[in-house]
Structures are given as structure tokens and as C-alpha cells.
Length: 313
Image (cartoon, rainbow, N blue to C red):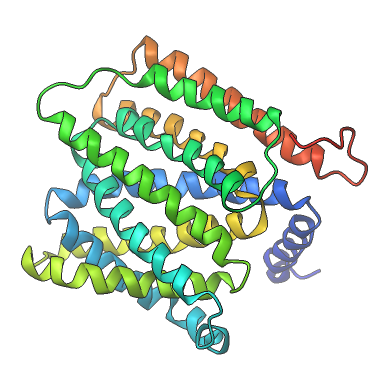
């Protein structure tokens, strides 16, 4: 085989192998990749926030992201022009704007590990919403894994004082809105493609961000535009991974894997900003990693051709 064809052949083989994986396992891998991308995006938010207001950053980033995804949207224009779950997509967009503004603002003012720990409460909300509104079966094993992971988050939450309390509440509000967004994503994806879901979410985000960006507008420098452009690429990749993951697997199966982002954010905070993790961070992280790894294991086991245990996990 010519050397020039090796990358293409390798990619084709990887795609085939990936499609053969159990649905929840492949969705779990996509979610882990999304968490890595979102961690890198958090760093870029801090860098950009030194030059521009948060709403201006989010507005420019969203416009750039739409431009990046335009060819994809055009290719799937037939499905996009005939959405079946339009109201759900609009609701998801509204929830996403609250989660985005609150979450990104908190990232700037609270240490990475702390803000991510607060945001991890979203996982418990998602599991509950999946069981109550989406009709997904959540057995005692996954409930236990979710509870253990949430206990790890609780261990990491330290008392906040002074002005940080406001941003902690912002992070919590963003988590609740994020859970609603994920639940509507899972329900709405029963009717439409990932491209349709992403398109209408982007439209709603731009509609809400435009007046806010106009009010707080600061002319961006060339450096700021480069940073935001990198963020836009990351957002596009992360959104596609995240959306595809929740379309491929059960929300209650995948949601606990978001705990991994806490470890990644804590590591980045220590490496770049000297945010040294304390004992609570170490203990909480240990619980979170254990819950995430166990969830990944159960996703693989219960989707096997001959499952060893037919009960819901």
C-alpha cells in the first residue's frame, strides 16, 4: 500500500472498529474526548477574559463556530429545514445560554477545581431527569456510582467566603441549566439529527448574545480574535463530541463520566495557575475517578452480546 494512503486507511479502520463497539461504550469514549476539549476551552476563557467581557467573548466565539460548522449545516440542510422537535431545540438553546454565561463567568473568578466541583452537581440532576422524564431505567449500580461521584464533589466543596459566594451561586445556576439542556438534548434527539440540534442551539445562542454583546461591546484586538478563534474551533469539536455522545448512549449512563473533567481542571489549575489541590481535592478526586471508571466498565458489560447480568445497572 502506498505510504500516502496509510493515514486514510488507518482512519477508515478506526471508524469501522469504533462503530463495532457497544453503543454506551462508544458514547462514553466520545464523552471523555469532549471533557478533554472542554477543559482546554476553560483555559482559553481565562486568557480571553483578560482582554474582553465574557458576553463579547461568547458572542464572537459563537459567530465563528457557526462559520466553521456552516459546510456541515449546508450538507444537512434538508433535515435542518424540517425539524421535528423545534420547541425542544429552542428550550435547549435557552437553557444553554444560561449555563454558558453563568459557567464561563464563574470559571474566570473561581479556582478551576472549585468551579468544576460545583458544576458536577449537574450530573446528579441529569440522572434524575433521565429517570423521571426520559423513562430511562437507572438501576442501583449506576445510582450508586452517581452518588459516590457526587459524594466526591461534596468532599471537594469548601466553604466559600466574601465575594466568591456570588460566583459559586452562578456556577450552581449554570449546572441546573446545563442539566435541563442535556435532558432536552436527549429527548429532542429522538426526532432530529445532531446537526439539526446543534444548528438551532447556535441560532438561539446568537439571538440572546447579540443584544448583550452590543451593550458590553469592546473592540477586540488581533490577539483577542486569535484566542477566540481557537476557542471557536474547540467549541465546535467539543459540541459535536458531546452531542453525539448523548445521541448514542443513555444520558444516565454517560452523565457520570463528566466527573473526569474535574480531575483535568484541577490538574490544569495546578500546572498553569499554581492552584494547589488540598486533601479534600485529592480525596474527592479519588471518589470521582472510581465512579467514572466503574460507569465506563458497566457501560461495556451490560451492552455485551451476552450480558452477564440482565438487571439494570
